Length: 338
Ligand SMILES: NC(=O)c1ccc[n+]([C@@H]2O[C@H](COP(=O)([O-])OP(=O)(O)OC[C@H]3O[C@@H](n4cnc5c(N)ncnc54)[C@H](OP(=O)(O)O)[C@@H]3O)[C@@H](O)[C@H]2O)c1
Image 1 (cartoon, rainbow, N blue to C red):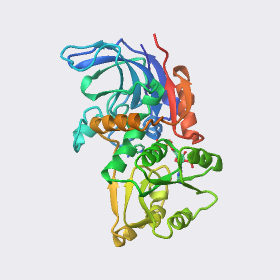
Image 2: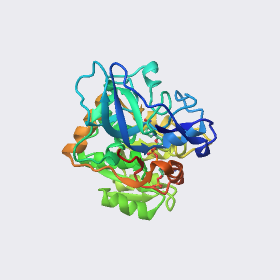
Image 3: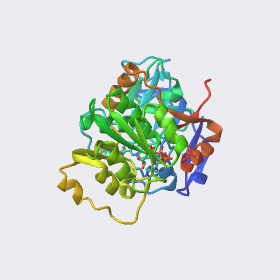
Image 4: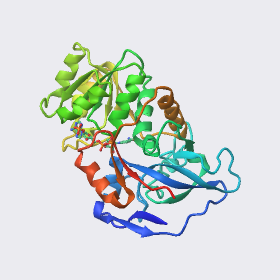
């Protein structure tokens, strides 16, 4: 069986294709033939090494997959050979709040992940994928999709609210599609007018180019009549947080998700206290949240936004495409069927 391994934390060049023994399902496990993997910003961090709680070395990378069950182990109920499935990002986070030990079972970082032809995994982490979705589409759900879903549902985001999405990457485009399904008015920022047009096509009510308007928080606030947005999915981190706080209404919510906009200085956070904001940390989510997301996508006919699909043999090129930030939505690696 072919698999990729991160053997040295030197970036994408440390990603090597290796030959590994065929996996066999142990008790409680199933063997899945992987058909598609979706990449996330985290996967760029894993090949560089030193990622918090994700320090297995060598490691088979990638947290997100969809595939077909090829073999069932003993004592597995609820699945059959041929079922189309995806897996929860954190292997052992089933429902409710997690603990540290559970969060150390993140696929593709804490434990081996899915950039391989076949994998044996505990059945408890699997979720059936909607018949309407291709393997490539379903592979995008576990990280970016669940993270956006977790942020929106935990903040009880609802119809009539205004949601701010930063950039047009994977999490933000799921935030846009789910925010629209919840009945929110969505504002999207991006470095590119062409990407903003794409966001409009996906339902963004308003768009702001953060390169053309470095003080984009002023433009966002003006778009809310001066009140501020109800909720920001903050994927930028220290480089955008102060502006996100400035764009948020009194009593609004900021979901701390990522760090793509790195900055040297610590952002001032006191304005969040003075304006009674809720700042919530979001780390992906549980299997229960993945099940909810699958249902929400099915009912609302949400089709995940896929920028480009690469062949398994070109996985390094897929990583480089993600790192270039030329994409909108998700970058996927497809594996051929048998
Ligand atoms: N906490 C969690 O559970 C969790 C889960 C998933 C992801 N994350 C984190 O969330 C972040 C986004 O992940 P992703 O997978 O969605 O990344 P991605 O698909 O690689 O998206 C990156 C996009 O971020 C936008 N961006 C870059 N600098 C920006 C800035 N200064 N202001 C606004 N937008 C900016 C760019 O959009 P434009 O090209 O349109 O400008 C870029 O294409 C990463 O830090 C990731 O590690 C965290």
